[in-house]
Amino acid sequence: MPTCATHVADGDRLSGLMATGMMPGMGRQLIRTDRAPGSPLYSQGVRVGDHLYVSGMTGTDPATGAPAGGTIQEQTRQAIANCLAILEAGGARYDDVVEVGVLLTNPADFAGLNEEYARAFPTDPPARYVAKLGVELPGVLVSIRMTAITS
Image (cartoon, rainbow, N blue to C red; front, side, top):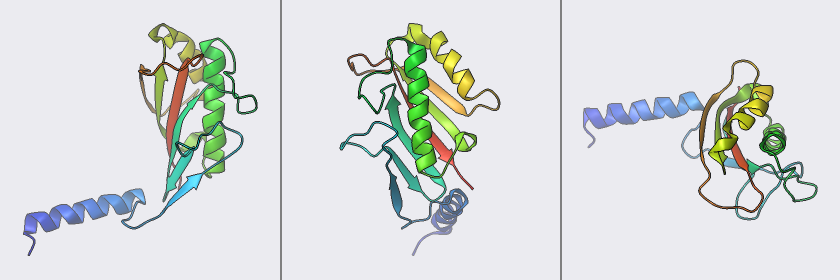
């Protein structure tokens, strides 16, 4: 028989899951669009309840499969556009984004990244982290992932 402390903790966990829309046993919906690059190794996006998780998108043009340009600004713009395409395919929009994760190949590109990022989120930006990309991918300067919560 569980102790009161265990029961309370489990109750708190269940309340927290209910508040986020992620109930135990709730299925996940895989999101797919031709408007963003994809791979058989990962899902472009996954929706669980009202949470939508967008995989890390590079600045790759989905039409050509090549980087959208050689500058951090061009690739950031394309990576954000790729994320937006997945958000829209999953029934979300920019206003629903609560967290953005950014991986940069070269930390010196931070200012250029911020130029384009400020255009995408001019007011009330979501939480964000930026780190150095630890994997070398030819021609890739940035990877961006997003988490959105819809109501």
